[in-house]
Length: 589
Image 1 (cartoon, rainbow, N blue to C red):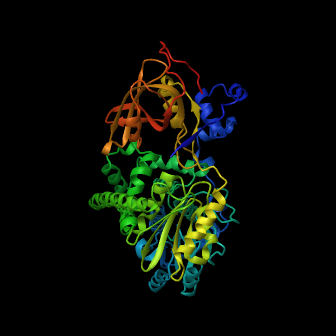
Image 2: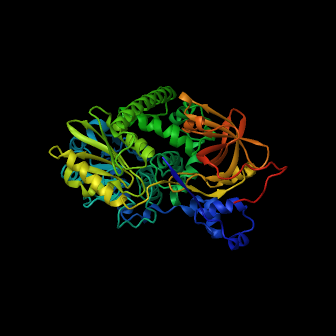
Image 3: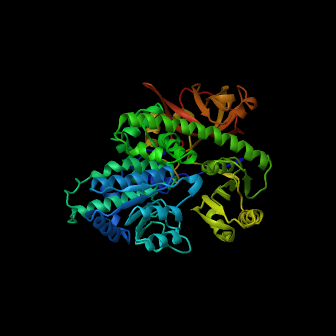
């Protein structure tokens, strides 16, 4: 689809004069992210854990929650941690169970089966957990919308502490404590924690509570013990696609450091199975390798495989589970590709302009969100993917920034048995008696109302225009200082105009990727790679002139490190090809 390039404003001269010690291009990248204050920049580039992490006790119900958990531990009450089946929920479950065990507890876990139980608490599970003699149930990554289920738990003799990060529904459950930074009346100063971030806060508060005099009949854990949990916080924060800003940036920055020396034999085996070195793991490894494997368990079968991998201390079991997750992920990839193709055949090449819908009869529930996401990426339109499961129509949706798809579900709530999510991702179950066609028409009408007057052309934001020959290791190192990258904090993008094509080729399966060799201000030839840009192969010839938007990274293979230019977008250039000079121009930004 066509894209519109927007070049961010250049850093103002007075800011350059005020901050002369910061490299010009780095300053431009910081300016593009809204940072012009010296102290703010220093805090961003060099975060400090003690300074930049908020106290967990700023949650309004935190003190109440830790006192109740401490009492349960002291009295040997039955505790169950009720998790979720995605990577964030599995990691959060592991964080709480490991903490409770370290404090002498023997918690059970319950992770629902996505295919038959769906998201969040359900009545049958609550009854089963109560029948175990459970006195205290801790939820992670769910519970905020489960009013009736929490009522049943309380009536069954259990108290419920909810830890979650999903949006506030019209009615909140009457839990013993609600720890969710997204609640409108919450006093915690940062709203965007992942579920594992919230679980980590509860774990830290519980440990602090025991160190400050709450006796559990055993010695308190050493100061800093909880930092070993940050590897799981990093994984979930990246894979759940919460904003990589504020406290999340700090948690992931230090979490990656912990992950690179993790004690978890399961994570060590998983990283080894994807041919990565543990000390080289970064947020992209988590987003595209580790996270999908952990998520695959809950998408294709039961998430217990992923949970067991995270908590096992047995090497043989870790190897077995790691291989199983990799195999399940491959199956997930094949199934997703097949369902996407089927969905695209329904939608067609020229789909309706506002909201796209695809529905199958035997599509796995666990991949519906992936299918919707891939279609949204292709057409830049909100998308709903639905299937039949357990006699119900269930679905997932993905959206664009201009349309809050979960808010739209709230306006179509009369048709729904349950729903939840975030502005750009949702899940739902249609009521048995509801007319699905009317439900879809309602969503399409809402999408049309919001999108008809808006320009929905996909935008590519560019941080700086540079001479290609000025891309060097100093710039690579400056870019790395801005990491970790993620939602709200994308990897910097650069623009170079008037590049002469030296050679063009395709790589990958069916030639789907483009390998482009170009020269710019000098005769130096630069290699670039454009993933899924293979269709350009027949449109370009040596001697053509192009403009490139690209990201700068490192391609590491064995002991070799090379600067890699990854194409984000390209177009034919209106500029004439540059004449070669002996040295390139400097200072472009």
